[in-house]
Amino acid sequence: MMRPGYVSMELDDEAKMDAIPVVPPSGKPILPEYPYGLRISLCDEQIGKLNLEDEVAAGDYLEFRARACVTNVSQDKMNDGSIHRRVELQIEDMAVLGIEDEA
Image 1 (cartoon, rainbow, N blue to C red):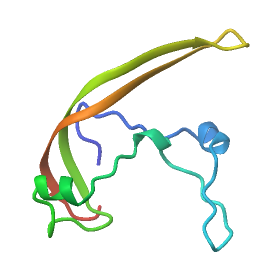
Image 2 (image 1 turned 120 degrees about the vertical axis):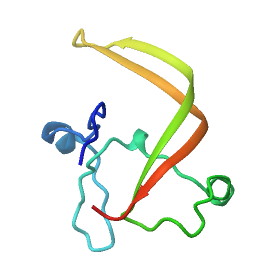
Image 3 (image 1 turned 45 degrees about the vertical axis):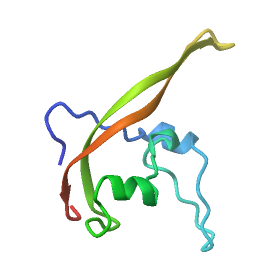
Image 4 (image 1 turned 180 degrees about the vertical axis):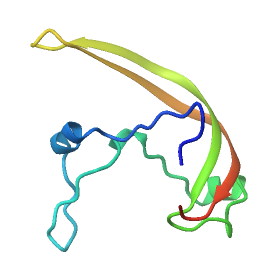
């Protein structure tokens, strides 16, 4: 369920085919649904700060708000003339607004 004002970051079909697949022990490649750079990890210390120790399970959805500092902005002109832009963010402050069970 998409909330108002949210934009899906899911890769389109062409981008999924261009992505590097993950190959699990089963040997069947899995194409990513979302770009690698959009995944963040919270470790024990951050989980504790957000009081999530016993609250979340794999498949749950966290709604959170984050404040991030722009650490780098770059723009490169590619050989084909297209422009590739990149903005890097460092999340500095974060709040969990809610937890939803699996969709």
